[in-house]
Image (cartoon, helix red, strand yellow):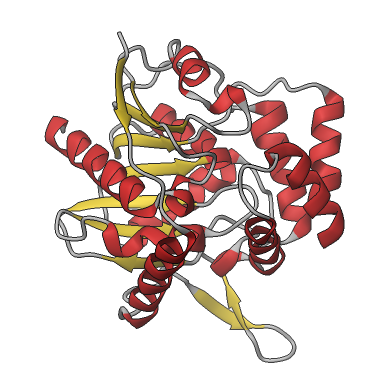
Length: 309
């Protein structure tokens, strides 16, 4: 059976939200860059070092290791607003940008779950991490569950934040539409996001997300990853996973398929004992929409998985 929890919290004013986000960003910038997990070998024709491994940044010094992956339209800087609220005494948090994003933007494809899974394992090996909690956000939930399927001895547990359906099979017109948005200019992307997300949050929020999307992600990588989460889904299909799974949903997510009832149903064949935690006043980006509440929720979920190990 599924366990279902709920996290609730009052609305944060814009001033308080911006202040907390700025404080977290300053704290993240001031933190020492420890073991960035970026391997380089050789040089390009203009003298720039070649990157061979996905880029990452690490915070915390706890005994449990957690590897965090990015979503479809941004790198792991999406987590900056909540970083200073994470439990860094209980865990070390490793923020890994998948190929085509952030610290890994210049890495070539393939941009899919198989390659992403290999990259995460290689990153863990480079840091001498034998076992870890894998955390996926939106599209990278596919990668998290893929790793739980193929390498359960390495995975303490999986945390899926606002996960999409994991079996793919979206209609062709949806897939092609998403790829067109990925390759569009800022105005096209803004119109698409406003249509998808509605008017719950401000135009300034949309502008912020568009600016980060442009800076953090290579358009062709974003387009190719559509096949991973919308067409193909899990490379191994609906094979049950052995490690425990916790999903965190936003109950005002613009896509009903990513709210708790649909996520519960989608995870049933893969992890019958999965735990679903819903954040009632958050959409698809709880780490930015409700930073302290989300950080507390994900930190407790990680501790829950560590106790079971």
